[in-house]
Amino acid sequence: MKKVMLCVAAAAILASCTPETGFDLTIDAQSAGDSPVKLSLENQEVLYEGTLNAGKLTVHIDDFPHQYAMVEIAELGMPAVYYHDGADVTINMDSVTGIVIEAGVFNDSADAFRDKGAFFDATMMTLEDKFRNAMQLNDTLATEQIREEAMTLIDSQTKMTLDFAKKNDILGAAIVLSGNTSSYDLEDFRAVRDQISAEYQDSPDYIKLSDKITALEKSAVGATFTDFSQATPEGEMLSLRSVEGKLVLVDFWASWCKPCRAANPALVSLYDVYKARGFNIIGVSLDRDKEAWIKGIAEDGLQWPQVSDLQFWQNEISTFYGIQFIPQNLLIDENGVIVGKNMEPEALAQFLENNL
Image 1 (cartoon, helix red, strand yellow):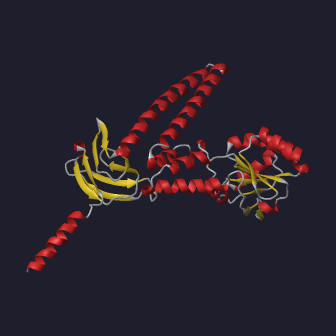
Image 2 (image 1 turned 45 degrees about the vertical axis):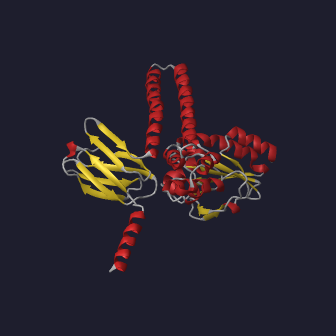
Image 3 (image 1 turned 180 degrees about the vertical axis):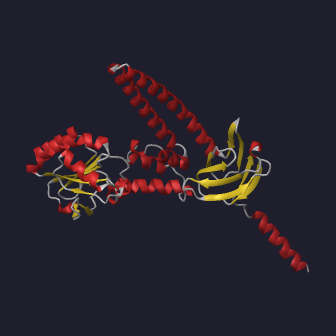
């Protein structure tokens, strides 16, 4: 009997030393009554579904990796978005007073970042109003000044965002991935990843950031370009290696992309001037409408090879190289090495003149 009691006591001690996993979600939304409630992730995975009891709920939920999460109460129709870091979550929601969330240190930092961003958003809205007024008055001088102010504001916000991301561990990954990723280069993404603690490397945001870096490394100047094959407008498969040239420009574009179409005349001019000296181009289109693609080629007078899988932003080549905006380009030498990236016509012309 004594031995049994000792075993029971030992089991109790061991159980008391085992850390509790998961977190408590507490909701106070009295105006919502007995409304359905749901907790879900950015990828729309639902972690909890239940019903409020007179506007209240307390439930224990298994923990999940650090990332943004969302609580939705059907009756209120306004989601409560917070950054989950494993801490207990308390949410007060009301259709009149709004949303108040307590959810740990990382969420406090996310709130601070949103407050910083609110200043830029408000300033940009003011500039947009001024721009519309200037356009109505045909005041070209004012519109140009406002455009320059807007660009300066965007640059400032980009710098603020990157500086914040570099100091906030895994939250930094979520921040740079949720904005305009084309504002950052490979070294920026590496700097954010390098400051993330090892304990958060199972986070979806860490994994997505690492995937982004891997894609950008594939298209970095100095990297060896991986060959590809896609269909031409005639339906034949064409690979990069089969495109002859001392320097070959891989041009990512689409017929629906106005900046791409605006850039095409300059490419046509460069092609005409330097093709005899060993310059060539292969267009990779992010079109999904074959007829529109073919029409765009004809309208812009593009004489160089063209390929596409007509998968829009899921184009296999552009996805492999992490292309998230167009136009973009990669300049490949005869050894298959990337020697230039996103070169403007003037810079490309100078490079061709110096190297062909």
